[in-house]
Image 1 (cartoon, rainbow, N blue to C red):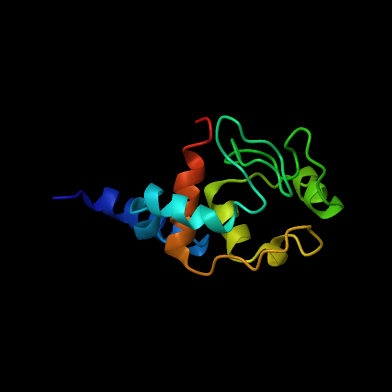
Image 2: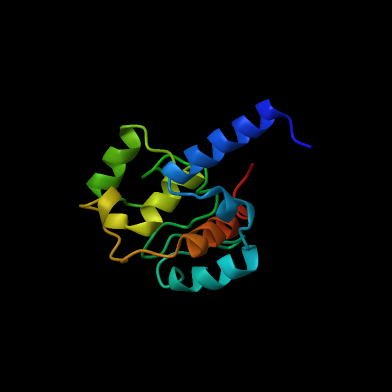
Amino acid sequence: MIEAGKFAAALKLAALLSMLGVPAALAQSANVENGADVFKKCRACHLVGDTAKHAVGPALNNVIGRKAGAADGYTYSDNMRELGQSGLVWSENELSRYLENPKAVAPRGKMAFPGIADAQDRADLIAFLKTFSKP
């Protein structure tokens, strides 16, 4: 049986994650294999892995925890650099928000991708990208 205090804390965490766009159940049930499949939508512009280089978009190795607009050697839009300078760091929640609707986060950014509406697909994609990020 779960203690009342732990249960209350779990409910608060679930509510916070939900407000941030990551329902707790989705974050816990993220599927890396499906994320690899979802990443196929990104591959036209982004690469990951040991030999990944910048392409149309920046390489996404170590994107989790990286400041927006800060991958060495990639030329970002002024908008994305400004977001990084103002403190935007690609946490799982921020990345989910961006992937849902890139123009809502960076309206003058270069990314011409409409976004990923399905929250589970976003959670899975982020789980996949985490496999290419240092803890």
